[in-house]
Image 1 (cartoon, rainbow, N blue to C red):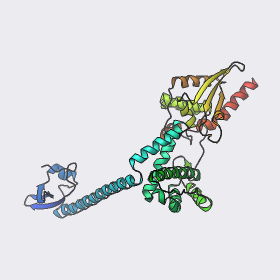
Image 2 (cartoon, rainbow, N blue to C red):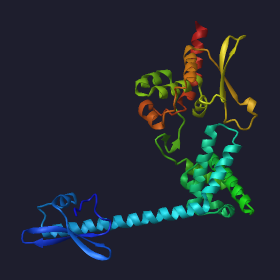
Image 3 (tube, rainbow, N blue to C red):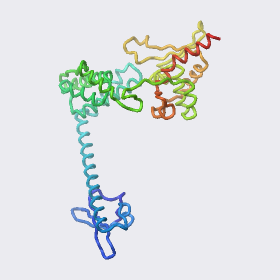
Image 4 (cartoon, helix red, strand yellow):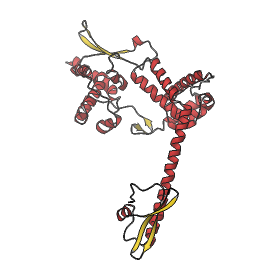
Length: 354
C-alpha cells in the first residue's frame, strides 16, 4: 500500500529504520486490533518533508515533529466532531426543527411588510438561535438571563436599536413556544439605563472596512460622474441598480422594492404633464399604509431612462465587496441617496438660471 500525505490514515505514527544502505521511513498503525507496519515510498517520504541529506538523528527528529503535528491534528478533529455533535443536540433541544418551521411560517403569515422585511426577520431569528445556543437558555430562562443576553449584545457589538428588535423577536418566539407547551412566559425587557449605555459604548468600538475610528460612518455621496467612471468595471445589472439609487434617491431596500409590482407604480398626471414614480416605504411602520408612499416626479432625461430600467427589470444589487473595489472612497449602497438632494438642486439651479 502506498502511503502519501493525501491518503495517510488519521491514526498512526512514523518512525525511522536504519539499514546498511541508510535510513528509511516506516509507518505503524493498528487495523482490526493488530499492529501493522509499512514502508513509506520515496515520493511520499519527500512529500512528508524528509530530505535525503538528513542524518539519522535529523530524520528521527523530523519524525517526532511530524507525529506531534498529527497528534494535534487528531485532537483538533476530535474536538471539532464533538463540538458539532454537541451543537446539534443543543440546537434540537432549544430549537426543534418542527417548531422553527412553524414559527417561520407564522412570521411569513403575519408579515405586512415587504419580502425584504421578512428576510430581515429571518436573519434576526438566526441571530437569536445563535444567542440561545451559545448561552444555552430555554424560553422559561430568558427573563432571569436578561443580564447574560445584554452582555451577549455587548460582546457582539450590536447597536441599541438592533438589540431592541432582537429582544422583541426573542419574546415573540418565547411566547410562541410557551403557548404550545402550556407554560407561562415572562418577557425580557428592552435594555435601558446603564445596560443600554454599555451596549451603545461597545457598538462604538465596532471596526470594519466601512468604519472610521471604530464607528460606522455615513456613506459619501455617489455622483453620476463617479458612477460613470466605474461603469466599465461593473456588470450592466449592477450599474443599473446604482443608477436607480442615484437618480431616484432611494434607500437600498427601496431599490429592491422596484422588483415587486405591488410596491411601486408609475403614473402620469395630465394637469402637471409629468410622470411620477410611487415607491412604497416599508420602513415607515408607525403610519397607515396609504401614507407610506414616496412620490418622485420624473423631470430629467436620466430619470426617464431609469423608468425604462425598471420596466426591463435588468438591475441587481451589487455586494459591498464590489462597491469597495470599483467605487471606493467610502461610498456604500446608500451613496445614491446621500447625493440625491445636491444632484437635483444643482440641476434645477441650472434650469432656473437659463
